[in-house]
Image (cartoon, rainbow, N blue to C red; front, side, top):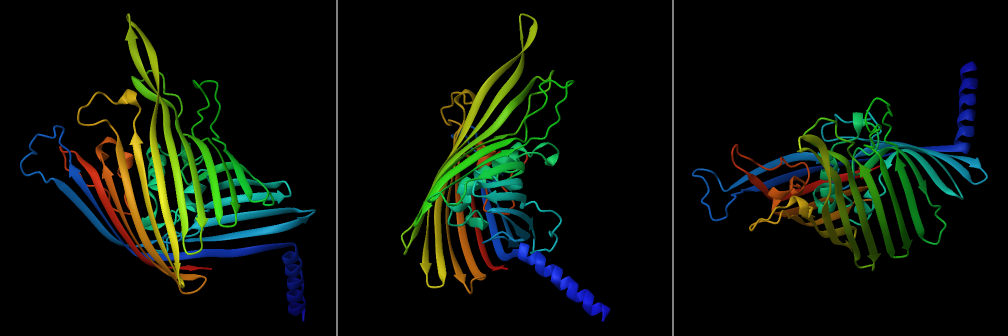
Length: 426
């Protein structure tokens, strides 16, 4: 009898709690058989010279893997909302990445998203780890949604840039990837503005200010960005801009160094659904703006000379999706051109220092139900002057990178990839 009363009391409490708030368990399990291959060509300084004897003119690498997240990112998460009355609501979102291909990655962290929010007629204030404002256009206006081998050259270049520059100090503060930023304070416009939407985001660098350290604190890890758009009927268009600070001032006494290194990203994307076909487009530019400092000696006296430089990565994407019965055909073409700061490019008859990566991707998704789908994607990347910029050595996913031989220089030339998989959402 006592056990029955306890059970009834527990049910009553649960009923009250469910009336005030809701909590949802959700996730995606996505797995694919994927293949990747890359080709790199031997670079000879003089184009008229004969390559060394016995040295191959090109190197190839290939790999076959059971991958995950080829169509949608594999994840598991919890989200909930509490109605506070008067139009106010509090909510949370905890989302963890999972690696279902090997089972090693589970709910060990909530690195995909970890936020708490307060929303109302004024909009939404969101605190925690979330997508950056500048990433949104890359994923919304790409037919492949920045997943699998079909992810655009624009997205891959931005990810490589963030990786080369490294994360924030101690791997914790500020923007530690192009896709997401930690320690962010964000504001989102309310949804009742006649189709207009937008957000502003500021991520704290959380570095310690210290009187005994020169130029303290470093701003490395700080992200500031915003996005504004309009969506009505078949049209969706949005622009975004963000500044991600990567490095601080150089230490005194160094012969050379870099200070105030910032990635300044702008992109503009749009889509229009005609019914039989939906078109996508995006243009983007990333400026790698930095000060290069060098210790010089003039008239026997040392001083530090600082030169402001800015390399540019200009990107464009065109794509389309075509519904076919229960399925969807997807296709895209994307390109990124690297243009170095002219101050860094000496006179060179054979090479102006630029580089370019072009990608074509095509795929098909067959929906077995609202939650389960089969998919296939094929992608090809061509690279020109890859020896001028390591960022242009982009691949089609988890590929093994480009080959090299000691004493010889090989530059990335092309990459090919495919995914054949299944996605189930819950």
